[in-house]
Length: 356
Image (cartoon, rainbow, N blue to C red; front, top):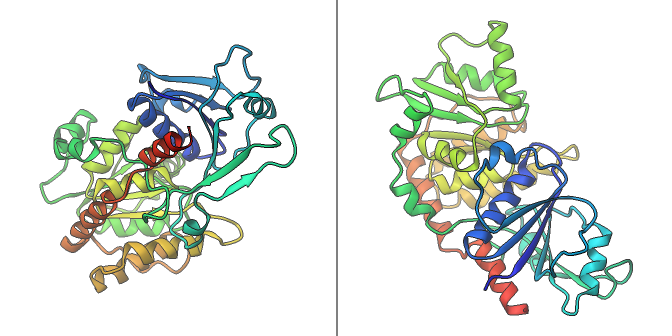
């Protein structure tokens, strides 16, 4: 019999928090767990996770805790969202307090291995006497791993990219045309990217959201570079977004959820990290590139460092290194390396059973 999990998520902006939270909820439910997902804004689920949704997940509004709520076995606050005080008091009143975890942001920086699993005893407030532990996703065995549902790679192996694209109204103009996806925050380097893509034999698929709105505005103003082939996509469910990444030859992704899914896709990609005013995103970007490109072909590594830095505003644009054969091979080798690591949900389940 599965445990009762309570996941709390505040939808700050850009839907990354709810994206990770929904994937975790869905994976837990698929493994026989009961999940209550507490959200302060459930509207994005209308397109991210359309009905029918998996059994075992109950979506609840952030706020007062119902009096008839069953006890929790595991409580997860995602990305330091801080639990409602009434819920913490309920946890403290349980005969057997639940395992309380703070699921942190993903990073390849060294502090993750040092901080993963550290406990934070609560000495005051409604949770006095409880302890909260920090759970860090990551890329090494000394971290909490990455979200990867069972059967993911088998599903990829049986995926028909041409059929999926055709069902979405996308046709590859020629067999040689490269298909590129674009999912991005507002980016000052967008005009440079579009100019570079216009010089290539490619079709750009632009995801719904801010970047698509900017593309449509440029199109209305007739300000797009001549020769650029592009197509606007509707909002995609998480499953269809995964399929988009699998179907494309190159993926531009952003934030955390799409960043991880691009790695599982096994295709060359560029990551736009969430920009921070204090510049903390720059060393985070460098830390991942250092790990991801370790042992890679030197020319390819130099090309990708240049692309990622310029796409993230850390250096001037120097052109687009079109994916080479070794880039695809590297993406697949990196995915294979990541599969050797125990996935995040399995680690959470192991921790929950160990402490129950």
